[in-house]
Amino acid sequence: MLKKKKKEHIEGEEHLNDVIDEGNAVSEDEPTPEELIKQELSVANDRYLRLYAEFDNFRRRTAKEREEARKTEGKDVIVALLPVLDDFDRAIRSMDNLTDVAAVKEGVVLIQNKLKNVLSQKGLKEMQSIGTAFDPEIHEAITNIPAPSDDLKGKVVDEMEKGYYLNDKVARFAKVIVGN
Image 1 (cartoon, rainbow, N blue to C red):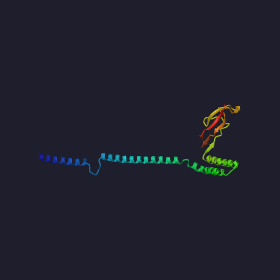
Image 2 (tube, rainbow, N blue to C red):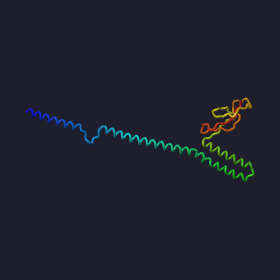
Image 3 (cartoon, rainbow, N blue to C red):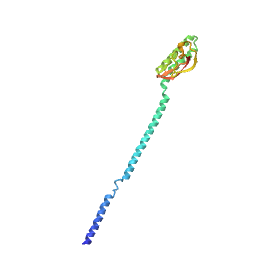
Image 4 (cartoon, one colour):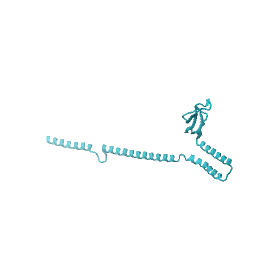
């Protein structure tokens, strides 16, 4: 009897070990945790590479667009000045046949006014410097001369080159002569 119980006990242990082994055994269909992590890493790496490539393409595209914009940013001003250039061509052709200087002068004044109008439409405005106090923010002093009167001391007496504002910012400083 003891032998029979011992045999049954040994057979029971084997059966129990088989059941435990089946519980620990991983089926071939289910990935291991390591494989899951590797798959997640692969997916994350793929997303990163795609995002990086998309950003790189965006950067290149915007740089190209900026370069094209820089090349054509003055196009509207140039196109607006073309009629003035045409007027100068006509004036030069008409000067060959004219003997009256007054008509030529009048034509040049008209062209100058047309040019000033086009530039003022684009935001260019002349500085008024003569008689104003010298301001180093908008004036460039060429020289100092004795003031013709006491009220012109420290003020702009004459203007060598006009200054201009472009959209309320200084585009060119006025070159002036200051009284002292």
